[in-house]
Image 1 (cartoon, rainbow, N blue to C red):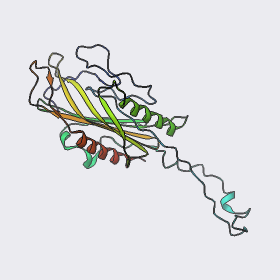
Image 2 (image 1 turned 90 degrees about the vertical axis):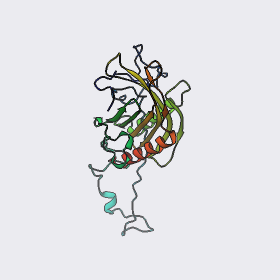
Image 3 (image 1 turned 30 degrees about the vertical axis):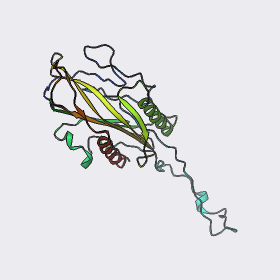
Length: 273
């Protein structure tokens, strides 16, 4: 959905920003090494996607008292003690085997991207989806990334480290695109929210490309070995700048974008299995 269909530079002013280039915006400092695949190659420029960490949950096997024992202790013949562990036992509640469809958001999909086509890239360990609208009077961009750690070193610890890296990156002083990360409760095992801005280079050709300034919120949550990351932003414009190369206007309210992004994260966390 754009005034300029047909051409988009493959640029990202976040983690994977290219060096040089005719109109690439200034990139923030390099992020710490990732412990999962990076954000899929965006067709437009968007800040680095965040990920969600995971919490270690221990499983306590409760053994009830046997009727043949004394003093409340089970007898040597209690079947609970002699039964071998099942080879098909289910994983811990905080370890997930599949990711939901990130393009299916139900009623949590913001109305401002209504009519935009979902651009999805499903996967077993990383699943991605985005919606984009770039008009001369407004822009909207919603980016969702789901990841699931299967690390042999421990999927929960691996996801926790990833989450910590993302939150740290959002708080780096030289990061122009994400600011002021804050812990939030009620979303998975860990979650944070941060202010989000971006400059997207978009047009039907290199000569026609414009710089679209936008802003909103980045919300990321971790549940078990799964991470849900949502970046949601946009802006309204009164027209291009005097040189005709840039659109700058009123960015989305952080408070409103944050609330909507949290609703999406909560919805997707509820679809983990």
